[in-house]
Every structure is written in C-alpha cells, then in structure tokens.
Length: 228
Image (cartoon, rainbow, N blue to C red; front, side, top):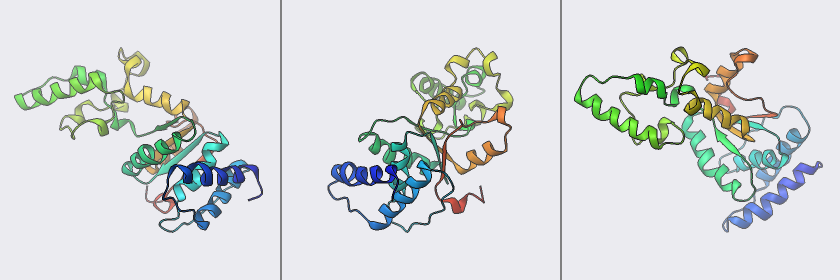
C-alpha cells in the first residue's frame, strides 16, 4: 500500500466509516483489498479479486474510487443489486463525503410520455390503470418503473422503446425521463449499471453508446458477466 490513494482510503475507512458505524469491525482482507483497488485506480491496469462473504468488498472498491475523483462505472449482476448499492452503500458514503452518483438502467425501465399520451384505453380496467399512470407521471422525478407502486399491466404499451423513439423531434423530449436519466449519468462521478446494460453498451458503435465514458470500470460479481 505504497501509493497515496491507498493510505487515504485506509484512513477514510478507519476514521470516517468506522467512526460513523459504532459496531463496525475493521478486517484485514478488506484493508488488503482497499490497497489493491487503490493501486489500480490511482495507477493503471486490471485487478481480479475474489473476496469471501463479509469481507466488505463494496467499500473496498467504492472508497478509493470516490476519493480518487475519477469517473467510474460500477456494474452489478441484477437491477435489485443495483438498487441496493445505490440506496444503501452509496447513500451512506455520500453522507461522509460529497460526490454525485446515479443509477443506469435499460430504457425499457423508463416511462415514455409520448406513448403514454398517445395510448387509448379500450375498457374500464385499462382506463383505471391509465389514470393511475398519468397521475404517477405528473409526480415522479425518474419515470422509473421501480418507483411505481406495482407492476402495471399497461407498461408494455408505454415504456420507452428505441424503435418508437423520435428523439429530439419529440415534443416531450425536454421532459423525457430516459434522456434526463442519461444526462444524470453523464454528470455523476459514479454510475451504477448492470451487466446486461454494460454488455449491450460494449457492442454499440462509439456514436451510439448508452453509458458515458469513464476512467474506471468495476465489475461486481464478475463471475456472472459471461452469462450476461
């Protein structure tokens, strides 16, 4: 742990994280992993690390990334794990040090305002659900289906779809949840994606990339990347 970032990260773990969590227990494997992650983030190269349950691997890679100031994409296996990383670990660390972070999902997770306004109901059940969606659309800041109270049976008719998208020619473009989300990804220091989205992004041409360029890519649960 001879590089500056490694020592700063270890001090942050001992003083800030442990200080904010009274029952927090420092573990040698976690400190060892912090050093390894710090050296790669501060320098260059590729690190493959295997850590047992309870090691604290999430903090081991997040702390050096945050302190480095570099832009990073963290990829998880599932959307549920994305939500956990976003709403638990990053939210906690952001109370100890200020930084911007965002969650990135495929466009099918976002409501399309044009499709919603163009949809015409055919029965009372659809009309009731449509009214709920319209009310939610007027209040939600993200348009993310995860923020909707329940899985809507109309979602397949109103989600953001690449084939139906008119881009900047759409009158709803300034309010578009999907493109506003992408703007947040561009501004954030840390973007939490998932293996499927990272894999799709890798196959796209440079002018069609979904995810912003980053200095660091972290694949959490890398053993599941091949299946994705």
